[in-house]
Length: 371
Image (cartoon, rainbow, N blue to C red; front, side, top):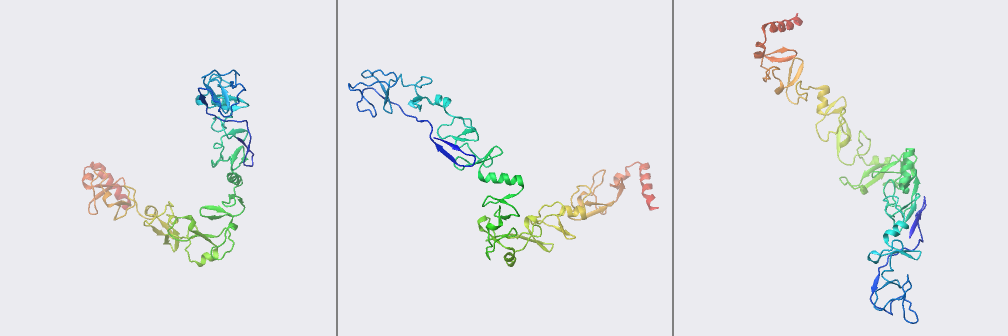
């Protein structure tokens, strides 16, 4: 059997030349009861190829009622015996599998192998039924039909999506039609709003409908329900200050508003706080790093936010454990005497090892602004 597939239809089976494989049985003596064998009035049997009689006790090949000498039962193309007695018949002639494929079997347009059995004819090529698939979703098309779109075979759903992509419109997940206006989003898919009604009042919904989880904490989409704006407002469900969508699970309350956990983010880096500490400034929330970077203190050495005590010197801020002599790296505290050299602190010991002329000039440079 083979099948023709129209550009917008399903596979249509039609009859093709006979193809069958038959196992050969061999008999070592005459058998008047051989099925399908017609004997002459004298009881003689003849080879179907050479038409010569069989000798007594000669081996005979019986294939579907036809008798052959073993040396006569060969491929009509290569004249070799059939491997394991399996052959293919076409127009009354028998062929081994290899020669039959080379002479008559079409090649699949996808895998390039010979197609034996059902043949799908479409897109100006031949295909195995399992190889003729949608170019987008890889779904088998032999029994579903297809639509030719820009020289590609597409299933009906993918064809609609391809057309929608070209026009910039959405495809309804239910009817697979194009959505002209604003779509309704439900359970992660896009729909025409008129396919749904409010769960509470039964009113036909529009694109402003709200999706609410039936049981908080469950992630299965089939627990979700749709409500019109009026019924949703009566339910008292908080609305996210960022996306303006209802919050059915964890709620973050800050800055006088409610937020989805993933929508409550730093105003600078836009990373969610996810329960971590935040800092408020002029109605905005900041993470610790960017709050101190914009409004707080960063250590002059490590450039990190100073979380504990701040050591302020030379118009700079320092972590307590990072305030050290810039020459010998000796740690200093608030009681340690130090000198400023090139806007960096130098301990008294290192300063006294400087040349006297350098110390004189440094002292003079510090006295000038004072005057």
